[in-house]
Image (cartoon, rainbow, N blue to C red):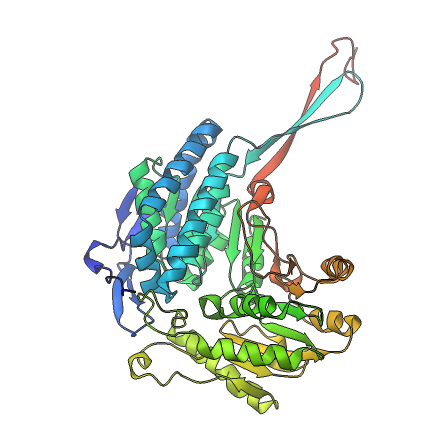
Length: 498
């Protein structure tokens, strides 16, 4: 299979997008965008700051009334046109995403771009399906509840799945009638800028979507603080999520947070082992483990642990690391140098606490990979209380522990503050439903892992955040209810009549 052509940096959009125009940052700063495969600079993007966010909010405020008044089916039509444009741009977007993030291009072609298209199509169809309600109240009165857009929403996109998360955030926000100020990650902004370029081409009105590239502590902070923003949607770390909540207090803006995870993945003694091995490997090693929902804690019944680990370690060692643009590559580099160093540090933390490195835990030896941010798929046997069992590593790094019975498995699964994704492998239907009820998580996968769809709500509990992406729940997240009372009986006087 071929290695796909590199991206020509000369054609990339690198400036801010505000009020329908590509503009320079007011202070003129720029940020290097790095290729994680070899550490080279792909391009430089504008460094937006607080004043640029203010410009973007002003544009979004001006566009908000017209966008909200636009018939819902017309908003949906534009989202459907955008989905078509993204689909037509699949090969280019996949190469762009692979180059900027390190995702293997085979995953970008088979998962990231198709899921992005599906999400925009789902919310394009959802735009005119948002219904209100009629509430039975006192005789002689009609009470109806309608859902209205919030107005201007701020959205902060993480670096790990930038293309897909853009659709998760823009789709419901725009379908519901809001305008947007978005900050993509300064590490992986390129696919976001390309999507906005396509939005411009299909005819989205000026000011409806505004993009400010920049750092979190400047541009992101201003989005969180800004009194003109009615809601903020943030995906990222739990620590930054807490800062977002504190910053939102200025105007009591609505907050939706999708934060970290430490997903338990339980394999029972009646599991179909080959399926559990393959599904568990996808759950932790897809996208180099850089996923909040990753199945990063393998919890194995002691009766099948040896057989499972023999197969699982063998599979992990067979994963092909390489150039993300090579269609044979199954695992690319981590997305940034800083994150690469962080993940490697957890290998030493595991050793210091008595953990056993069963496989990986090192840089790959191949000479052609030395300049990139690679780490071999890593499997560590660790005790339930060890740091690597409690803290989110966010890499191709999975811990292993064993259990004797269902009660112990559940106790281990629920032993962290996180509560995002979780999984279990069993043929016992009663056990499956019981664990689905009792696991402390926003999502549970049974005999599968890491399945997502735009119709199904996505989000967590505990320190994994609150609010939901996707599904009808997301449309509610981007609207607010208004209760309207109508006196339908002219014979009913007001309370204070003469």
